[in-house]
Image 1 (cartoon, rainbow, N blue to C red):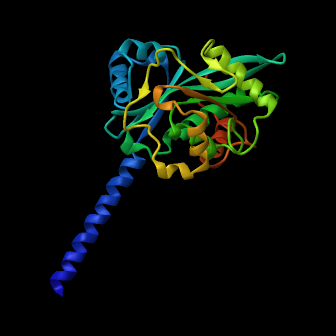
Image 2: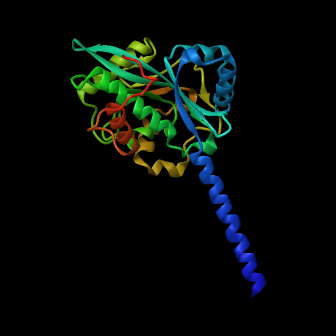
Image 3: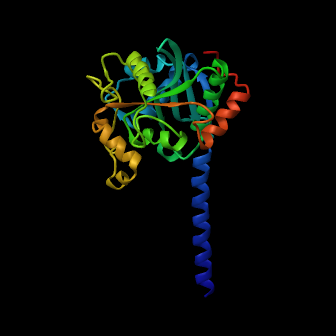
Length: 274
């Protein structure tokens, strides 16, 4: 009985150690916002190494070109200072019915798989969006323009926003459709199809690698994932689904709302006026 008790205690300790290690991984990333101009060649080497583990059909030169087109980057580092994820950002503008609208455009975004439960990326993005909203003023709307070739990216929308488009939940309102068409058409002329909402590249750069983006059959019971699969059936070929949601207190939820409000009321040295 004593030996059985000792074995049980050892198993318990091993399980607890495993849980602690997992929790440490999930909570150990530290994020910072940087200007793209601050990215050194050594840092870019690491960014490309992380990105190319999950995406194929992209050269270092094309990756660098896409990177330098953006304005900001969220860097996610582990406790040893090694980059384990990143997201590139750019503030874009478009005229809709005589009004100039602003949006945060999310470019290349990836987090190494063991770290994907960390909320750090969402926290910093939401704070940054709050600061932008504060700068453009209450009388002007701010949007998040997101393109998605993976169902995991699309899932950000129902997790953190109350209303977003396109969605199975409701028809696409005319106003939001015009706004999305304006942003997508400006950034991807000749590639964006307003009728389908899809962005198709002749030679897609950065397709998801096999085993990284296929949708498991059991996940199709999720109506959001099922909608994404039906709307963008060629996502594994690099086709992107254009999406939009408003960045505002009344539309955000969960952690995004918390840090968006903090951004609206606080200061952040990395954010510059729109």
